Image 1: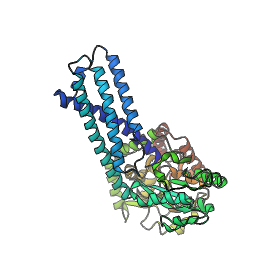
Image 2: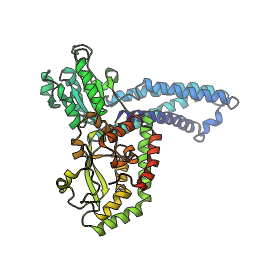
Image 3: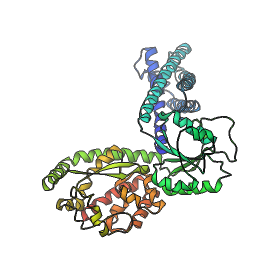
Image 4: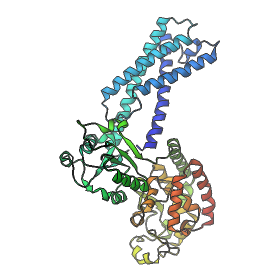
Length: 483
């Protein structure tokens, strides 16, 4: 799970836990007193509603503090379930005691005695304990299944081969369900025999090979296990390279060249990790963007279904071959995915590429040809009207793309990149439309295109996405720069 996703997920879990606690308290009251579920409200001191509201607010804050202090929202990737159950038990007891004080305060003038309030609180503690254990158990099971199947993986490159690197890699290798995938090690040589013999990952190259590795491998994080003081210049260069690519850098190394006396589970202790570089987007905005993508793409797919079917029928009637064009593109984190578009060229267009490549009308690695002979008559209309892009809504719905973002490029174009800062465009999801689309499309040079992508990444906001979406409509009707 990416840092923005994890942050927003934890915030939602925190809110959900408070809702579960208040629901458990109401359920405990209904069970013990025989009243309806919200019958507890009938027993509140209604002559002082402000005081009751403030007391309830304080209770929520106290509960939240109890849950946080008992490590409810710390990463549990490496903790055993028994340790988590103990933390849940302690938190449930403390929440029950605080609810007892709250009930005594707000029900002080009701028919409930101290014994009854204590019994309600005890039942509440048991119910909340059972609910929290159940939800955490289900969460662990789901996370284990998804991560063991390759979902929610963080691709990691480890810089260093010392004992710290060995301890880190050993923890990752023993627990694939944690969701970390070790791409390999980078160092000038194997410095620890344990690391070399562990088979946790291969030595991919020396420190000077990092820029080339970042260009070819999907990497979400670079973990530096070297001592910061001794390798300051090399680490500074690593951070600079990762900044060009939009990749996070974290350190588990000490400041000085000292080995630890015993192996440590590094993933277990976030405080032992120093973040050297991270450009994650705003977490709430990131979540809203994804929800918007899923909802809008679903609505558009349903609304444009007649157009979808009509275009598919016309393609089948006017030329031989499949309705859809499928091609591997480079997506988020340099991960390949299959893009879906309406076919606008002849069937063997990919094989004929060598015959027209010398006619390329753009500078840089991309290929654009206004009067490409491979395009079918219907394909020219589909491209001019951007109707060929409609199937990409499926990619957006599945999460491979976004409505707004840098355009996804073929593998051929990506391999022609000559500057690393161009590759930072892959630190976000590709999109159907972007600043390049609304400001001229193929009439804009490659360097200007890349500069617009960097501008989008640096200045991103939901409002910017909205503006680009609305500006796309007239750009499509004008057909400016379309090929």
